Image (cartoon, rainbow, N blue to C red; front, side, top):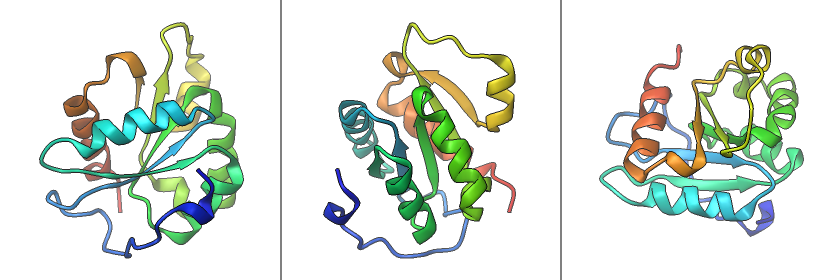
Length: 144
């Protein structure tokens, strides 16, 4: 999805959001199917979330610069993009980030530590409830 196709009705609010507020999540990764699955999972339950998809660094940079994101889900294949974004967009440096893995992915410990990720989860094992709980916990634990 291109950034000009997205609805921009999101409003700024105090950070971190209240426990009752719907989260705004940026999915960074090349696979639109993975982003759609995350969006479906996060629409379910008591605390529905809005999910934006950024396939490229430029799309992600625009979303982060607007400040309308509470947390980031990033595909392991896009970690280099996330590192670049954290260097160029100040707000991204302290956003909670959850890294999503495929079953055959192997995580380099040094890479994992350097990302500052709040967690690493296999996409195939994340239920809607676990994904929502993981994001909510990561957002609430972010230092302000």
